[in-house]
Length: 517
Image 1 (cartoon, rainbow, N blue to C red):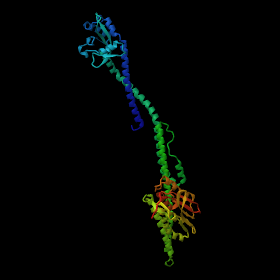
Image 2 (cartoon, helix red, strand yellow):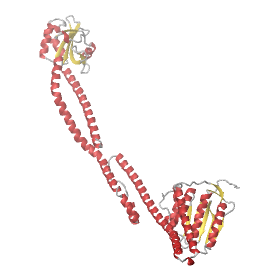
Image 3 (cartoon, helix red, strand yellow):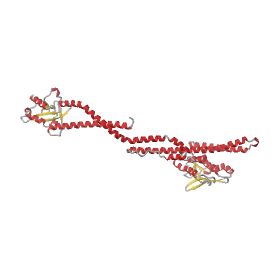
Image 4 (cartoon, rainbow, N blue to C red):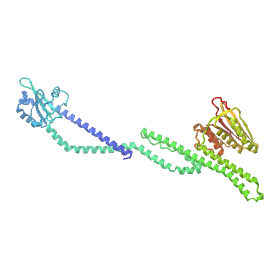
């Protein structure tokens, strides 16, 4: 009963039976109408003939007792007739029946006049033996010897005996007729609607089968996803397989439209699924890179300490402890960056945008990194206009610049140079961090450039929702990426292996001129 086919079949069968009942009733009424029309036309002159052949009626006599005998003879010849004489006002005068059978003593004269005027048949008139039934009749106007209108000869066609016989025969034949008719219609409806409904529901059945096939196919996706993490080429092939229903649903426009909507949803689901796979792969690569970054200072720390411990007390060098301390500081810095990156991704850091002097941010950074740059014999040059004002969060922007300079110091060789300056490109102002270090490969540059495009679509995202999360660039540049998303700043990168790198950060100037204290 829950299947669409069953519900449609039952509903359609009920509707067909209801229509059959209505049609049967209409046919019955039409049959009765046609029968009455034929009978009344055949017996239209019946009353005139009776009045003509009977001497009393031909003389216009309406109340003589001898009429009852004549009525009895007439009714023997026509058992379905009931004969009455009426006065000019329609009052019943003479008849051949028991007194208690006469229910109405007056006949509607207007109907009689309509019949005599030749109106279209059938015309139903008053039945003296019934209070509510009307029947077809024949009537003749009676004229006495003086030429005066003395009344009417009123003949009911299909009287009480006719009704009794018809009811008896109908009661006997009606169940057989109804049974045969209903049986035929049920079988007809069954055969017809099985064919029609199968035709109409076939597209839905195909749709259900295809969806079940997709469900079974989708149940294998976790295994495919696991394999994709181990084999990038296989993951690429799986992602290319389009998840969609076949184009074989040629039913109604509704089914076609529904199939289109399902395919659209499947395309969106597949896109999300591929995005999740890329996120998993990116996190996997990020963790591998992170483990390497953590393992290097940790191994150095443990190595220096172990070396210091195994040496005799007289040969232990304090430089080993200093090297171990430096490795510990590097490890501490990496852990601090991880905590900061986690806070950014969880949305625990909010940007407080306000106008600030850019030189105030850079002077503090210059003081911080100059000793380290001198120790590494790297030139650190800052060229910032003293009165330049930008709209940003000073703490977050300082962290961005700090990470970029720190990254430059890591990869710039001895005798290299790091510059921080502003430049104008058209009406847009950019802050540039430029170094003469080892540079980056093209795929690393493209990964960072994706940030600028993705920010235009979704600037406030702080989670792994982009196609690449820059794991190969280290934790510091991953923090730069997240901070610039938070600050709604674009970034552009120019770099080549062995030729250094150039990071350009878009600056937002105040809309109106300001003078800060």
